[in-house]
Image 1 (cartoon, helix red, strand yellow):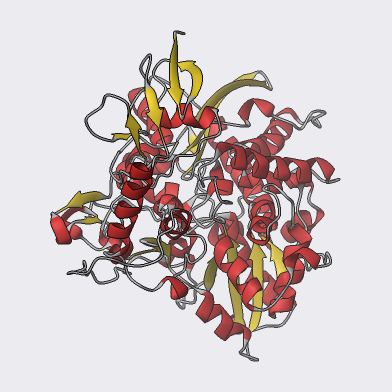
Image 2 (cartoon, rainbow, N blue to C red; image 1 turned 45 degrees about the vertical axis):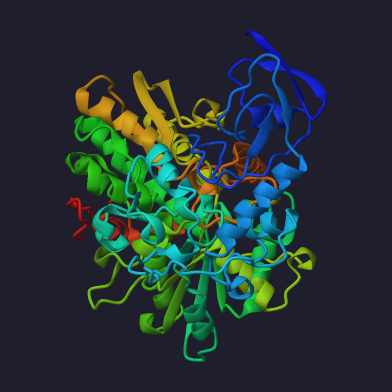
Length: 584
């Protein structure tokens, strides 16, 4: 590739052609401030914070969108540039709410941090400020347009990464706003509740619906038996909220923290993941034998399922009828566990600790309630919400001892741990499916051909004289690519794992905000979190879901066998087409 010679801040450098000024500066350790820029999204050039001086140019140039040219002489830090950046930040701040100390993003706000680093110490401009009501109709996401700085990251992630195209900019001037079509409430839009808009927002224009108050209330109620269950990816990410390196496993410290907060019992969503694998493997083998409704589409990701209902309703019969691991475990807590502990289900309060804002929507689906209308899962806390609760309680997470999960629903196989990484559901399922089809014990449990899917991945496996074509996709733009091939007949798959969020659950919409200088779609952070889960899997003695002794006991004592009438009644569900305005 052709290289370009140029000078940045009196330093001669050589970079490949098509490199932007911002990227070129990074190669020599010069960080140019930015707000609208995001490395995983298209270039917008909206905020103008990243302007630089290019010798010979009539105006300042945006470094995020200007490609280098031979002989360029660039200054990134002249007095004029620094003043221009400060002026721009001051203008943004003076149209911004003055509530930093009470804002959810205080200390983790890119605008706040940039104002500090640029030396903005006062508000200089007065005038009419934009005013919008908080839009909190969604069960998962809150939109506060007064805090929006019109960087358009949310629009781009919703369109480019998720393929939902739910957000756009409308109106002008002080009425300029980012919203769904016709400024519809989020609940009436095609929003899939994935929370990726929250992840990329530099301020607090998007946040998750807070559930901490109702959980505090339940913990303070002596009449409630309050149970926490922890999703697989939580253990690989929660430590980041307390200064630990990304990918630091913190499973049992989290159990300890939850007990300190006052939870009566702490179970592992991994148990539900093992149960999901057993039920889904039985379902898949049945479809394979009958050659009907193939490919089977996994159903663990509620954001993906809502996307399916909106955009590919004709493929709903292909979706696995298995409820998600969280819902399966919650159902068991208010049936099986309630019976063996002689508890009234009405007195059991179940809290899911999830990486996913869409889980807040999932628990409100009518099909996830008892016949009497009692929700199986009472509340969902994101990883970020739990981190805040632990800090609010004065618990030093880094100094906690390690405590085990409670029995009998706290034991899990390694296959369940890897559910949190993209490809993990597929690999866990294959460990069981292959053994059931061949009748032989697997010697190598690592199906590395479905791991580390950066977007999407395909593989073919020879199993019991059959060729199984499988695919893994994360991020719904990739899901659409696969589903279009299924619809057209271009590809014939047998099993497809689909996850709404980039990287799978480890990149969920409720995961911790990244350290300074990193971004939440950072593939390296995703890899570190995923590796933590694979390491946990490797260290476990039981690594196949169907070998979990407590799963076997559950079937023997309560469910009879996989796919039994009772199992189907309790552990399986249905999905429904949704019109573009989201009726259900």
